[in-house]
Image 1 (cartoon, one colour):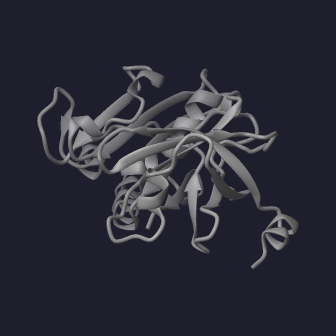
Image 2 (tube, one colour):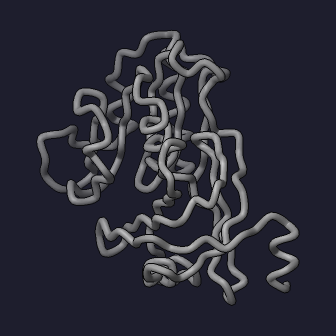
Image 3 (cartoon, one colour):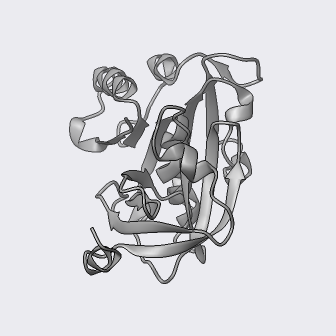
Length: 223
């Protein structure tokens, strides 16, 4: 498809500002916002010119930032993520969007939230917290090792709980589903999941058993 046709559909070129390496497999790409408006929790479809391959990534940055960010994990056998990680300042990516309805209620400060993420599924919650710094939340982030923490300085330390499936740290040792099994949760809490489908299915059932209603829960599945 010609570049002109892409632009007619709403896709635009955005210049890369920085590629931030968290681990050898985990990266943040920061790129020009170019007046793109979004609602925290939405995602973008991203590709590299000439590849013809497009993937969806939750927006990691805040609505208050003058740039956009996505968080992604490199798939060694993948056709796009290894090339995304090799991008340099000044190069361009093709961005389409924003898309999606994974968002907070219209009056976000009136509710209590439980955010549950695994891996790079923390991305929309980072956007929530930075966009609405006064929301009442608890965030569970399931990762394997302490060095996989993503921007821990952007969260209140008493609201962020890491659940490590491996490694050693002074946080919780076990999966997020193990933590949820023992969690006492207020019945009016709104719950948002983002991560693997298996985690979401297991966590959903745990919280249903604790009296949380299906209409109080939303999910964004990462494949």
